[in-house]
Image (cartoon, rainbow over all chains, first blue to last red; front, side):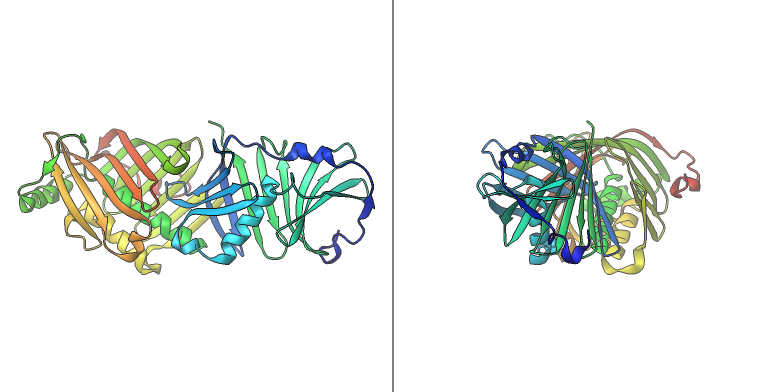
Length: 189
Length: 217
């Protein structure tokens, strides 16, 4: 599938779309090692995904030696920066991370209208989010294959999982509009 | 972003180096009365330590989300400025400072940086040397208050330079009066989180081969 016309061959399919609601993650307390490669530069650290008692999700990134880089809150479609170090407090960086994590958390899936498309042997469940479209891609039995974020034509981000997305061993977030990849590997404790 | 990471790591190298100037208890501390005498003693005693090997346990507290990450590993120091910090559980991460070179290995990625490549690195290098030479109380990057009880000194270090202030509100080191090595180091961040590193199983002045401070080791 070429990037320039990633979604042009999608065929709208009538039918139920409820099966994808099962993919909304319910991370209780998941720690990952994080490896981030951006434009040839490399950074590593630890990432925490945690569901708070009020139902919000927190994503906190620290380095291995203990310094907290950022702490983001996601709650019912809202986003709040709880803490970010000065050097990362850049709108473009924060927006990129926000959109990546909203795709990972499938923010908006519960309330947005979902359309189903097919392409080859894959089903694309699409819902609008933050001026773009997020896709949940499954096989014909509604088993999750990957998540994607795209504009009308271009694929922007792909998220893949090892095992499943509820308790993943590994998560890979790949950007296509610029050279950035985030790899999260579950920490066994 | 690489440089940002390197800067943060470098700050922590310095903070960890600071930790090896003392140990002690946290109760009933009173200000050190004779600061000049303390400085002199500190300097003399620190010079007796040529190497340290130890294990460590690190507790990172994310106060706002009520979460704690505990990790452990091994630490090596060799005068003048060779340090190896090896996290072993629950993740693997290796950081080596060998004279003017910083080596970081995470997963299969390796990064090498020169300490002299920026001003902040040089500040950190200064901190490290001050620690092993016992002259940290004269370091202009911090205001340092010294306290003591019968067993320990407690050094409360507040950064006064912008680069360090971006990350830490204060760094607290406990120094054992018996051997002038550290057993505990707390890094307090501006956002409210903090990290405490507990050192144990220390061996002083053992012969550590230089190869320990090579990545191939």
